[in-house]
Length: 98
Image 1 (cartoon, rainbow, N blue to C red):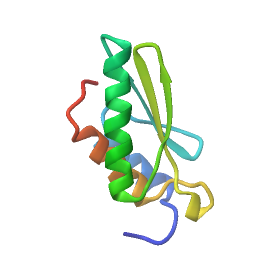
Image 2: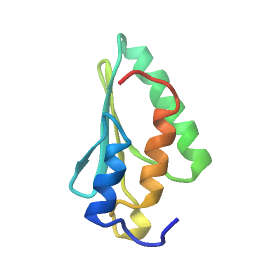
Image 3: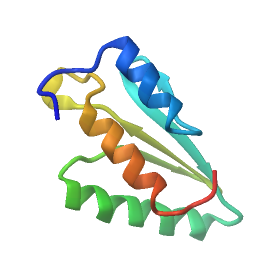
C-alpha cells in the first residue's frame, strides 16, 4: 500500500472497479438506500465495525432510508489513498444493495 495519496489516474482506475462510488473533491463517496430507517442504521453499524477492524474510519451520514459513506485519508492530508479504496471495497463486500 503506497504511503502517499493516489494520482487522479489511479483514483479513476479504482472507481472503475467500485460501482456506485464517486469522487467528490478528495473523498470517495457512496450513498446507500434502504427500505427502512432501521435497515440503514444496521448498515451504518456494520460499516462502523468493519472500519474499526481496518483502523480506517469513514464519515457516515445517516438520513431517513439512506446512509452516505465518505472515505478520505487524514494521514495523507485528507487525500484519497489506497486505504480508502480498500475500505470502499470492504464496505461493498458487506453485500448491501447498490
